[in-house]
Length: 300
Image (tube, rainbow, N blue to C red; front, side):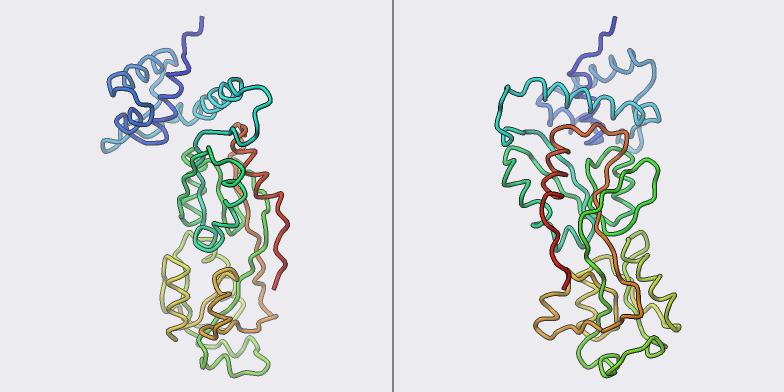
């Protein structure tokens, strides 16, 4: 006979999400001993430890990573069973953890979340702004429910759903030598000083492809934020590939010049990421629909 309880599964999921018994107990409004007891009993029934202890934090074991999607699905299905028949869609409640890459988290978060927040005010949203590599790791470890990223992700455990375009632009400060050419060509980039994102970001990967198609230049700076790169370009420190969404205001006010580079491939598509093994309950489905149901903005 199966003796696993919903409370034990809730404890398991809460510890996996927060990393400590204390944080899980606070989230669930129960005592730490009760959380520890529930976890111990669940591990006894499973017949294997679900967590490894690393520097006072609990990290999912191999067995824990395997079972977490199942536990999440059971809890979400129970919530759906208990939802009142005919309840309005706004009756959705719960927590949703999103991972947004730099451009989306800093420049498109309103477009990404606005419709969902309006329709489902009872849902608590947590958004972590990270580079694409960190978001992918969070999804694979089941710490992030949905990823929103700037570049292609090739992992057999992840589903990628195209959202919208936001092509890159090669930008320079007004008065930069590259802005003086009437018909800019690849050879004019010889010796250019570039400012790039840090390794692990999708923007860095695409910028490196651009550099590989141009005469040799040099990487002057590596910065971890799009806004920092933009300000460095405005200050005349170098040139950079910047997201279209991040440059609109600066180009319109003349602080930044978007170079005409038809010989470069700067197209990219923003995407949603979902773990293939993760149950896509009402919350995740509602969020994905809220993003994909909107018409894509026209390219400039």
